Image 1 (cartoon, helix red, strand yellow):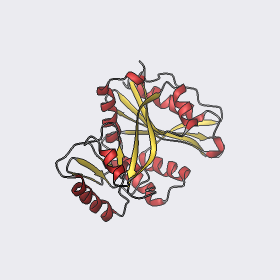
Image 2: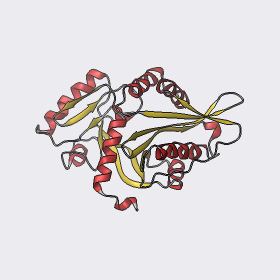
Image 3: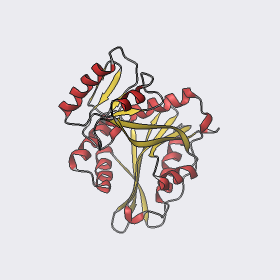
Image 4: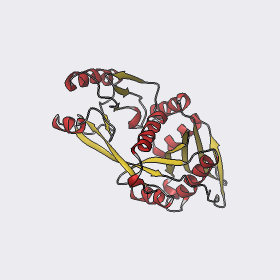
Length: 260
C-alpha cells in the first residue's frame, strides 16, 4: 500500500497513538485544546495540541493558554497538523506573527517489518526500563538533568507501555545506539532513536529499529509509524530502507522566535 493513499481513518488513528504515547502528567484542556506543559525536551509534550474546534474566540483562547504556559515557565507553542482545529488555525496564527518551526514528517510503514537484523559482533542487545532509558538517551543528547527527570516521569506514567532497548559495546559497556517502541492495538511507534556520534555510519540505527519492529510485529503490530525532522536526511534514508514513507507533515508555531 502506498502511504500517499493511506486512508484518513488510519492516519487519524496514528495521530491519536502519537498523542497517547507522548502524554505527560502535566496537561489540561482549554476549550477543546489539549495543553501539555512538561519541562522535558520533547516539544510534543510541552505544547498546545489543538484537537477540537472549541467555542471561544481565538484571542480569548490564546490568552487562557498563555497563562498556563507562563505559570509553567515555558514558551507557548502550538503543534499544527492536518487534524488541527479550528480549520484555518495555521493561517490565523501566522497572521498574528507566530513563526513556523521544526518541520516534521510522520512516516508510516503500512506493513510492519518482521525481520530483525543480527546484532553486530562485539555488541549486546539489552532492554532498559524507563528511568534508565531516559538517563541513557539524555546523556547521549546532552540533555540537562531536569529534562532527563521529566522524560523518566513521562515514561513511568505513560498510558501506552514503552519498550526501550540499547546496543551496548561489550568491552566497555558504552551504549552505541538506543531506541524505544510504543505499541497500541495494531500500531507501533518508534521513539527516541539515537546513535552515539562515534558510531554513526555503521548501520546500527537500522539494526536497532529492525529489531524493535520485529519484536512489535511478533506481538501483534501490523502498522508502524515514527516522527522525524524533515531535514534529517540520514535518518529518513534509514527509515525508507525499512519500508517507511511520508504520510503527513506537521510543524510548530510560536510567538517566540526560538521556542526550543
